[in-house]
Length: 316
Image 1 (cartoon, rainbow, N blue to C red):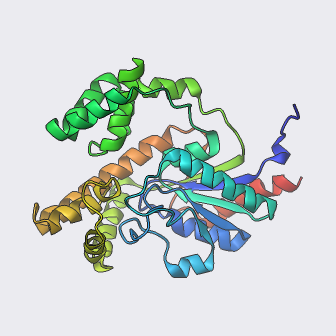
Image 2 (cartoon, rainbow, N blue to C red):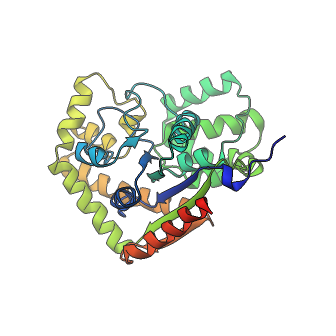
Image 3 (cartoon, helix red, strand yellow):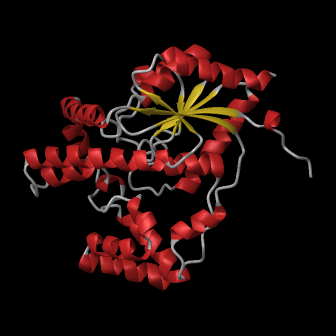
C-alpha cells in the first residue's frame, strides 16, 4: 500500500465559531485575498427557500466568491451528515485537482467533523425500536424522550437542543438497540480519518457582546422579511412536522403564524434559543484542541499571516 504523505493531501482552511461572531465576513475576506472557493458547513443552508432564517450568503456575496453545499435539497427531502461528507469531499477533490484554494465556513460542528475526520459506522438498528420511539414521541412528546436521553446518554444530550427530535430518537434507538450510548461509540471510533491538512481558525468574542449581536441579528432577520419567507414555505406545503421547519427561528415563526404564540413571545424565544444555540456551538468547538482561537477584535493581519504561513508550507 502506498502511504499518503502530508504533501499529497489538500490543504483546507476552516473558519468556525458560534453564530453571529463574524465567520462569513472573515472567510469572504480570506477567499478574496488568497483566491479560492468556499464550502458552507451549515446544516440549514443546504435547504432551498430557507434563506433569511439561515443567514445564507446573498447573491452579491456568491457573485464575489463561489459557494458550495448550499441549496442542495428541498425542505421535505432528507439530508444528513454522511451525505454532507460525501458531497463535500467530492467538491474538495475537484477544487484540489484545479489548484483552487479551499475554504470552509460554518457553525455545524458535526458537519465539519464528518468532512475532515469521518463518521463512525452506523450500528444495526432494530426497526421495531425506531417505530416504538416515534410512536412514543407522538403520544408523550419530544421532551419526554429527551429527558430519557439525558439519563442514558448525558454526553450526547448535552450537545442537542431539547427540540431536536430527530437526533434524540437517533441516539435513543442506538442505545436501545445496542445497549451502548452513541457518545461511547463515537469516542471509540475517534474519527481517525485525516484526508486533509487543516488549519482551523476559531472566532470568539465576549459573551455579552455576542449575545447582543445575536439579538440584533434576529431583529435584522425580521426587517429583511423573515415572516414572509416562512409564510411562503407554508404556502408551498412545507408543514410544521418537517425537521427544517422545527429548526431555530422557523419553529417560532410557524407557531406565531398558526396563532399558537403571540408576536412578542415568538421574538423572545428566537433570541433566547439563538443564545442557547451559540453556547452549545462554543462548547462543541472549544473541545477541539486543533482550533486556533482569535478574538473578533484582533487585527485581521494576524490571521492573514497565519493563513499565509499555512498555505506556504504546501509549496515547500
